[in-house]
Image (cartoon, rainbow, N blue to C red; front, side, top):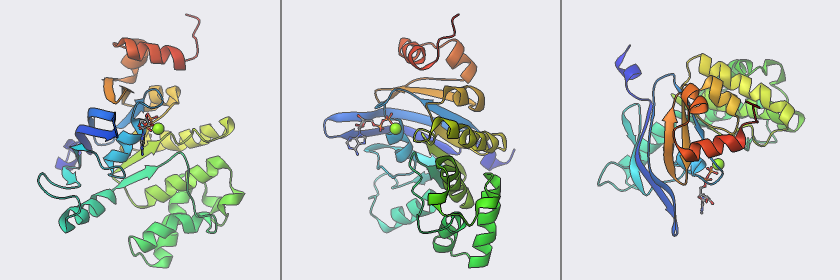
Length: 263
Ligand code: ADP
Ligand code: MG
């Protein structure tokens, strides 16, 4: 293993966030190792989205630190977030984090190919031909090699979400963050998106996946983390989490979301 493979890719320490009087993250630690898929589960409102957004500073945490491959994201202790150096480091580090949301937010007036190539051209300043070649490759990876010229309006929700995944992958992130990316999809379209995510996980992509899909957490995750009321209640392997949850809150949640087994 190289040095960069032994460092956690993502490390969060003591992350806190409040909105007004309501403390949404109450001191969360998180480690994601190279090539690991960490699934985050928990009831609605438990802080999962806020945590994910704090990991790339889309939401600025009130306290705590995030490091990406050992590099601190955001301001160093004593430094202002708005200091030039902090902003530069933030831009640089953030560019290494891919994020996919529940809503795909594709540009409707641009083809699938152009949507994927856009960041490469504007952020990476890649020449058009090279960006298009890379975008085509990424669309192939999510099974959409034949839909490169389609506009989002002519793609299904599942296909649009796969374009969004290709767009994030094109930037060569060291980690991909997924926030409930199948929740807005019709049930019959969920499988194709999860299949792409399973392929990525199997291919060694480092991923943090907030999901309601317990089958995905059970099969694709190396670790599962259960959050409740802004805290990590329990973190374990999927086998332990689903067969032998330790905390009563975890047990209650799983009883609610898992179909009855009849056992
Ligand atoms: P989850 O993703 O687990 O459903 P969230 O992180 O979205 O949870 O939300 C946690 C809590 O924080 C919720 O009570 C939500 O209403 C609140 N919250 C999230 N974002 C904001 C915001 N921008 N302003 C005020 N409250 C927010
Ligand atoms: Mg959420």
